[in-house]
Image (cartoon, rainbow, N blue to C red; front, side, top):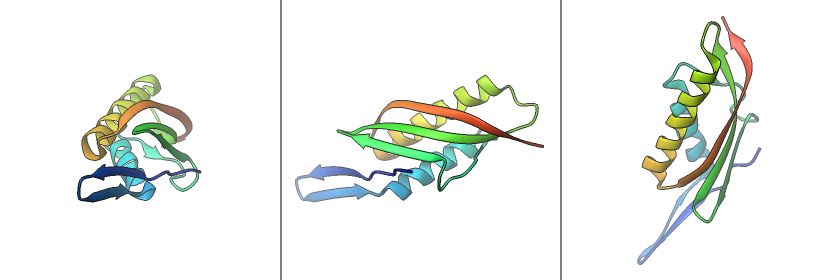
Length: 102
């Protein structure tokens, strides 16, 4: 599990967004479409390099959900959350659906 921090330099100092705050954004974006992070402490990897982020996320989906559509919706929500709230360029969001919830 990796959760890199994102640092935004500025003229009067820097802003640091910790990895746990980025993880909270990812988890909230996941829940908006009816999925859940399967193991938020171990099943979420966020890597940042030069303002570009890669996310790997293990999900639990509701039984009966159309899994490819759910995964795409999670990818879009996570991308928008990280772009809109943290100003990051999202390189990729890899989803693994590991479990079904009743």
